[in-house]
Image (cartoon, rainbow, N blue to C red; front, side, top):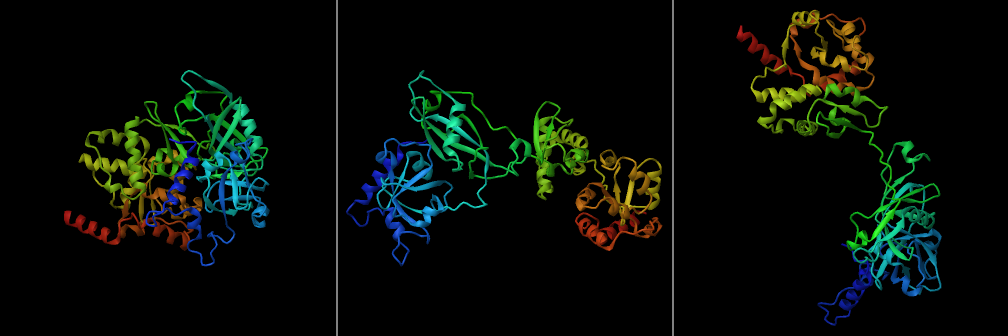
Length: 491
């Protein structure tokens, strides 16, 4: 709830408090606060700051334009402020142009009602002001969005029609070469009505490309308006003083900033028609979504999944816990385990499938020791288990998703130590993250000399990186020894 007339009332209240005679209860004015903490007696904190008393510009200059972003000051204000051309509160977001004016008394700054509301300052109070110097760090805005409402609410049933395109055109002229920031307020007189405009969003231009062409939405909250900056004007949604300030305004031809899809998300379309925008990074453990995760051409690909929305929601919660390293603490609902397991298989999420199987009570761990003869037998019967540095990887589910095609791995990597091929075809270490999903155990130490080796060997640097990465999930030497002892005892 915003009171657009709050500035004057607050100033009167503070002046009344300051006038109290009791030293114990007397309020301290902002001018006195600015005087504290400085041995030189200056009423400012910053070296280039100046203490100025806020004066309502409409009281001095009745014909004032609430769109103009100019602060009027006395000619005695330091040259530093005049040369900078812009003025702001220390640490504040909003920036105003500064200009000397004969109507401004010494030690004062004339601000419009909208400026006082934006800056959260009160009439007849002193505040510190510093120069704002434009440089390369001030971005040029590609566009800015405004929301609009009436300053004065109308009676029920009384409606004012305003053309949003006219509002945007007038605001664009007024903001030309001005620095505008989000949540800044302006008051516009249009068709005998006073409108309140608030900046809701701004975006900077990238390499002089329009926003929809660049596909990039860099974060910024303030920037310079130039002739190419586009303005969008829509009805007010949440910022209003009275309900009538919105209901009494009919905005014709409103415009909204075109939505720019995020480049790091995938839209999952569930079997019951729901849509989930999910970060790509979160979906990396889902083997059947690999092409979408690795794709870069489509900024926001839509992928149908044979999972209904409630189950997919649980899957995403599990993936988020796993990404935070807390999958072991994830709580499974026993009533949804079968649906969750089917979803894990549909998405190719092995970790979730195994966790579900554990809870269902019929899981036999895939992480175990394997004989080389069993690996060869499995591959000769149509399977695809591969060995890298003694690790055994089951990549059968990966073949349809492999960017290099379905045939190259079976043709080159089966029944040999394929570590050198992995280094040869995967220049980046991004592919390491999939190894944990394929890992099913280790080759018995006494069988490793039986594994054929290629003439070329993987580099020492690659082997070091591979072993450092896989150490987080591989069976340790101690664990392998324990499995060996258990196996021998079972004989």
